[in-house]
Length: 402
Image 1 (cartoon, rainbow, N blue to C red):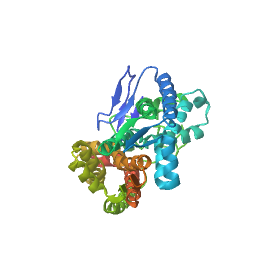
Image 2 (cartoon, rainbow, N blue to C red):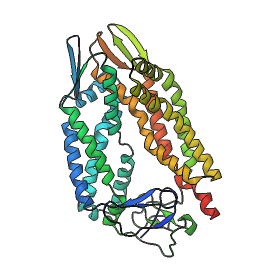
Image 3 (cartoon, rainbow, N blue to C red):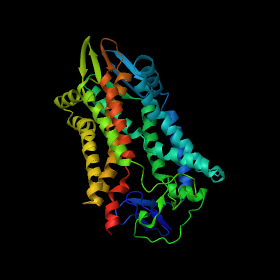
Image 4 (cartoon, rainbow, N blue to C red):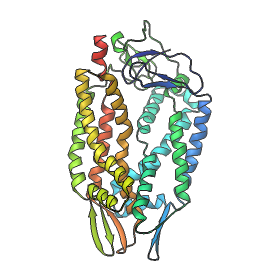
């Protein structure tokens, strides 16, 4: 079987894989496909377990804290309701979608595609489900939220006594099972069960698909010379249309929102009647001065450094696609951009947690401010920007030269 690498467009001949084996592109180092015995059964088992732990984490107490005899405790479901009722519908929507609805949707979708109904689906309907699964996988923020909870606890430890409830421990187990579920999703095997891969005539591995006038379907990985995929009927292109221009446009939009996100306060703390607004940078300074150096460094890297580095790196990739001086290094940078993009959401979740939990009136309360909305929009724009970029254009001049 010959498959095209989604990172560099090289055609790679993949033989039968053994247990826990992976096929790696010899050109750019990207993983093309992996194999695990009884993968479908494991996928079903972990999906069901993930659902059970997710639902178990919603209603029991997630976290509680006490100060001067006043006790505040909250569940995830109460946090959803509090944000929507008293503060920001935007933050509440992001919270509900990223923490509950997206994991729920992915698990239900995985159970569907792992069942025998998947093979009976019309390819048109299968295409939509596969594309939905591929898009929503990139929006997994459950692990980021868990890290944000720990950061919030460190922030509150100097002010109050913290206790974790049953909902917190259930959520940890949910995150572990959910990450394993995502790792077990094999899109190649998924489409092989739906419909066998068609191998076009005159395929030569080692060359790029485009050099042989082949287009790779981004939904099912089918190689074709037609305008529509013969397996799932998705419209095919040699490259994503205007990917560099779209990536630049989204990144410039993110840069515009980055300015007010860093200047304006993201939250306001009321302590014994005194208001203390805090920006992202001032929050880092407070954590550093209080001796919480690891947390201060984490927030500084995730909320200040990563957005700037991502913008610089993306513009470098676009320049590299024109020059093609080191496409392998550029591909590695792109893969890192995909991984680290969502980590900037830590600060958003920290504010959400503090606002939901710290509500003791004039004694101690936290309120969200407009800066966190700008910051959220900035992070989402950067994620869209990276996903809009087609990494295969980094290799076009290299393949043409060969």
